[in-house]
Length: 170
Image (cartoon, rainbow, N blue to C red):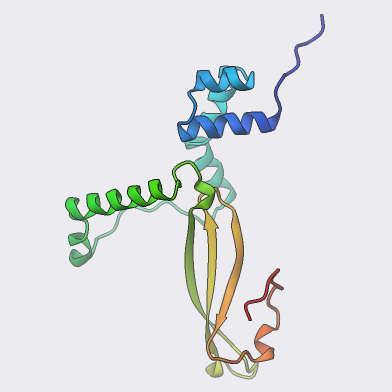
């Protein structure tokens, strides 16, 4: 007896799971459209929750779980249910206007970190502050970090040991 072979590809599976997660297809519809067994789709949907978190924590031992800490009362005031509800209503409207709910690859988050960079190797008292900006989208795709130096003219020695960017900021 010849064993059964899958009539679908890995790409079909990824497409089906994304469609079910976004809510554009039901599990049944994804099964019918892509000829993938329901169990296979369900197994791949499950792997995106607790199993993903557990694997992520194992791969990143520097990340730790923490208990909630005391919150500043002024900050707690901003957590008023009406303010929060209004914020999310406005965000939902923006997501609808820009069609972001079905395109998470268009949603980016940016963070910055200031660091002292020593220009003079003899002492750290002559260090200059630089800002490093990182950006990643909702699917986890990162764009190259940007290093922002103080001043209007870039000193050539500040580029030492920095990665080469695929584009120029000048």
